[in-house]
Every structure is written in structure tokens, then in C-alpha cells.
Picture 1 (cartoon, helix red, strand yellow):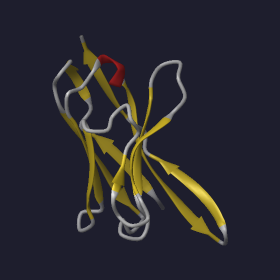
Picture 2 (cartoon, one colour):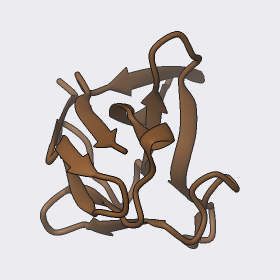
Picture 3 (cartoon, helix red, strand yellow):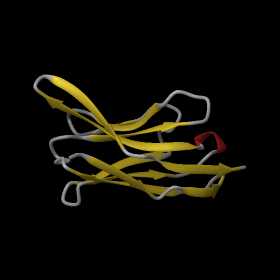
Picture 4 (cartoon, one colour):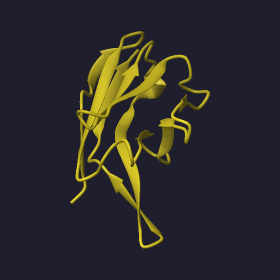
Length: 119
């Protein structure tokens, strides 16, 4: 059974930093890459950090240069280091993975961790 558990969210002032963690069970991180999404109130869920097929990282313009995704395969855990936080980064942050089974993809999500950035 796949389980993803996020932690590390909280309240921080603008300009501050937070480090999110997502511990996975039921998957092998080196085979099933995970990524980070966020969802702000009234907005669609959006991808904020991911690993490419070659193992490098990529980010949307809104967070590039401020957020860094990393992983520890031995711990089956990914991280999201968030620096220079802005009020618009306020959202629930989710880790995610897609598992292919019998040719069909299935998405798995954690429950999310709230990040609130005050101005």
C-alpha cells in the first residue's frame, strides 16, 4: 500500500524559509519519482518542483531560484527547501507520485501540509 506523508509546514514571515519533507512507503523512490504540488484557496493545484527523466530538477517560473527539491533514496524521502518565501506561496503543499500498473497510471497524494506566509 502506497502512503505519502508530508511534514514541515507552518507559519513563516515573508522572506523566511521552510523545509518540507515527504516520507514514502510502499514504493521505491529510485524507481518511482515523487514531486511537489501546491494548492492555494480558490486555485487549481499546481506543480512546483519535480525531477526530470534524466534526474535533474525543474521548477515553474514562480518558484525557480527560491525552491529546491531533493531526495534521499535510502530514506525514501523527498524534500522541498523553500527560501525567500512570499505571501503568494501560501498554500497546502502535497507530494505526489504516479504508479503504472498493467499499463494504467494511478496517482497517489499525501494529505498535504499547510504553509502560510505572512506579509
